[in-house]
Every structure is written in C-alpha cells, then in structure tokens.
Length: 171
Figure 1 (cartoon, helix red, strand yellow):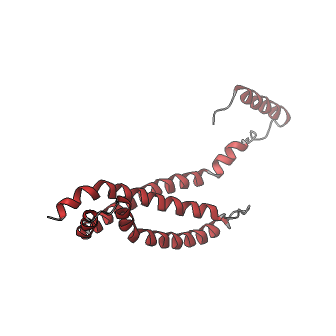
Figure 2 (cartoon, rainbow, N blue to C red; figure 1 turned 90 degrees about the vertical axis):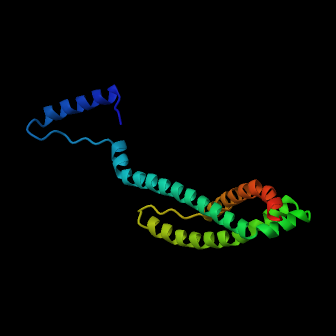
Figure 3 (cartoon, rainbow, N blue to C red; figure 1 turned 30 degrees about the vertical axis):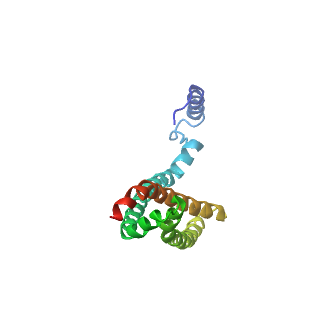
C-alpha cells in the first residue's frame, strides 16, 4: 500500500531519533500493521480467487451438462410430449413433466454435498484460533440457488423447444 507524506515524515523522524539514541546498532525494523495483515491473509485471498474461478467453471459445466441431459430426455420423450400437446396440455404441464426427473436428484445431490461441505468447513475452521460457528443459512441458500439455476436452465430449454417440436414429431 502507498504511504501518505505524513507517514513518511513520521518514519523519517523515528529513524532520526533511533540513530541519535542508538548510533552503533542496526537500523530499526518497522512493519506496518496493515502490511502485516495483508501478508497474513495473502494466501487466503489467493485461495478465495482460485475457488471463485473454479466455482464459476463448475457452474458453467453443470449448466451445460444439465442442458445436454434435458435435450436427451426431451428427444426420448418427444412423442409423448407431442401427444400431450395435441390433446391440449398446457405449457405448465409440459414444463412440470420435464422438470420432475431433475428436481429430486438435484435435491439429493445438494443434501450429500451440503453434509460433506459442512464437515470439511468445520474441519478447516477448527484450524483457526478464533472459531466461527457455521450457519445452516449458507447451506440452505446454496441449495436454493442450485435449484433456481437448474430451474432457469431447464425451463428456458423447455419453453424454447416444446411448442415447435410437437407438430413435427407427430407426422
């Protein structure tokens, strides 16, 4: 961090007094507390950026995988969906039909991942001198965000493909 001129003037005054009082000793070793904290948490800051980047990559890959799985399941159930459309099913019924195979596995996966991350976070936080209690709010909000991203991904795909493909598949 950059220092203000008043800091530099103060440091020069401290150096001058030190040299007057102790002329035959080594120069004084000064270290700012802000620099100490920055050095102390530098590796944690780098870890945070690495985890953030890997999390973004993971979310993008999961959205791509979810889209691919949705496309595959839509193709295998294409005729059933077309018949339901022809018999007057609403778009919401088709969306619900296509979302059902995804929601339960997503919730079970989040439950397993939440328990594992709870254990790992507890272990990691116990290595610090000041202990912080884990709140279930973070894990519940992560689960809600996961379900929300999955619902948005799947619903967007369903809405874009459902009405257009139903007339073609009945021929």
